[in-house]
Image (cartoon, rainbow, N blue to C red; front, side, top):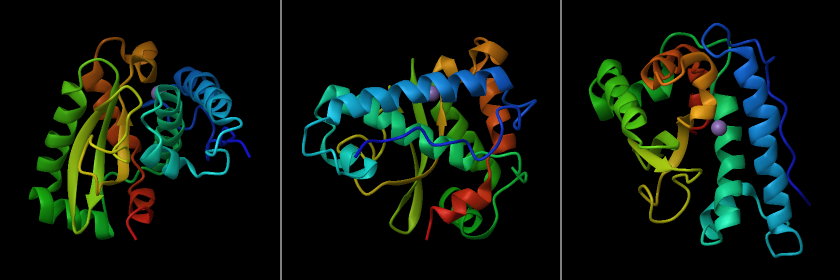
Length: 198
Ligand code: MN3
């Protein structure tokens, strides 16, 4: 069994003007696709061939090719699924309750999450994770993610995350990562984030 590049649940231009069409296409069809290809090569003829991507991230991240490409596949799959043209402007339901009980209010959460995304030096990700009954924010380098042991809280279940590699924003935002992070908040689909909580 091998992994396949998942189709996006929307067209490449669906997130305009926040995320531009050319960036979306290169990011999905080239960058994500390469992680999938390299992951399949790395697991070929090993005991990981029938493992889920979550199991691979949790149990096999000591292997650098697996760590980088398995993380790349998991992270981008999550990312495409928590953004959409239906970003409805703010959290609702369970995630809204958890944001308020953990951080105080949405504005405080947004500041803390944006700071984590801004201060990740070089390439990486910032995450919102469910940890038992509360939320935690963390960030990871390269294609690492909170499922990999010893990085964030080992009980972390990522429910939302932002890619802060330059390939995610440089064509439209150049070096202005802060503007890209603001744009991301316009395309978060909080219904999809809620689906990751139950
Ligand atoms: Mn990326």
